[in-house]
Image (cartoon, rainbow, N blue to C red; front, side):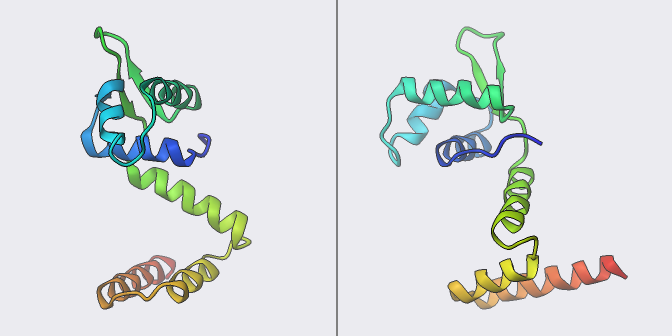
Length: 125
């Protein structure tokens, strides 16, 4: 399993998921309005992310192009499984109960949760 991304790395992954393969400059410019950091910080984070297996670097062009190795859903699933194990002692029910009790869920969100529960129940039969 790949290493868990930090908050800064997740911000970069969100840019890559939204934009697709991008240069360091493109990632840096996309991050700048939300998180003012230096270009070299963005470059260093991308290099670390490469070492962690979170991104792939295409070195065939003059400006290296980075892309996320995993789809957002894969990374989200890994993070949720890790959260359930570490914080909720492996209990998905405790996670869901905590999530919906902490913030008022909309009718649409509750319908999505019901649909997901129905699908999960159907898979177990």
